[in-house]
Length: 283
Ligand SMILES: [Zn+2]
Image 1: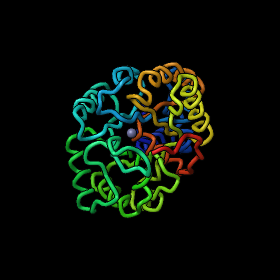
Image 2 (image 1 turned 90 degrees about the horizontal axis):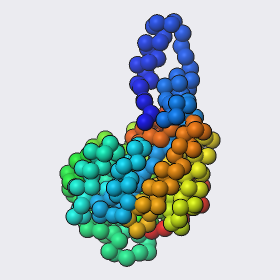
Image 3 (image 1 turned 45 degrees about the vertical axis):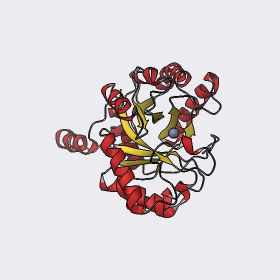
Image 4 (image 1 turned 180 degrees about the horizontal axis):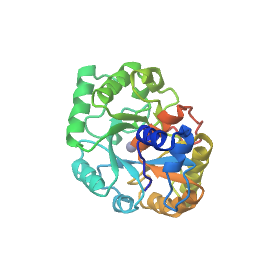
């Protein structure tokens, strides 16, 4: 795992002892190493969606030994247990908020999802209850949501709750017309959004290709955010692909980090350009 040390603190200490000011970027990179001991040249956060169902691949993901962020759906029989297991396994936990899609079955939304007819007060209540259940959550992202993520009012209500609890919001980008960029100024961090989905289609060579693509984005832009899944969309095959490709990317200077650390990296680079994705914008 990479070690992140407070940049400000190190700058103050070095300036005092050596009497020189090192440029921020050299300092930052020098403090972050990949598992293979090379200097980090780019950062990749992998978010694994759809925890909360004890879905296929849950165990495999928990045992990878790579900093993953587990996005857990609330209000399901295994929501709390999966979140606890993920936390105990050293993963970061975020709440995977079920949100209404343009197309798709209502059953895919799960209980107490966010739909377009809900009033702000009810949206807030559902998010608050979910966060109470998932006590380890340090952020949120959206499950589906191609319809309501375009809705400016609903996105504002969502981001208000995130801001109130000092939580990250990472846009899964299930629609090209997300309303998040329009409200991102109300947050104290830049727009955080998925660059690539790992599985579509679900097969080992495709998922490995997607992981390598994330590596390329990170080497070019400094960071990349990928989303994979447990359950029928991915699970075991995605865990296998991560296991096989991660050492290769680390040898190229990629450092795997949690979503919260990507926030620091993005804030540092002050770049929040969205890379056009070839991944499906499904649901
Ligand atoms: Zn999902």
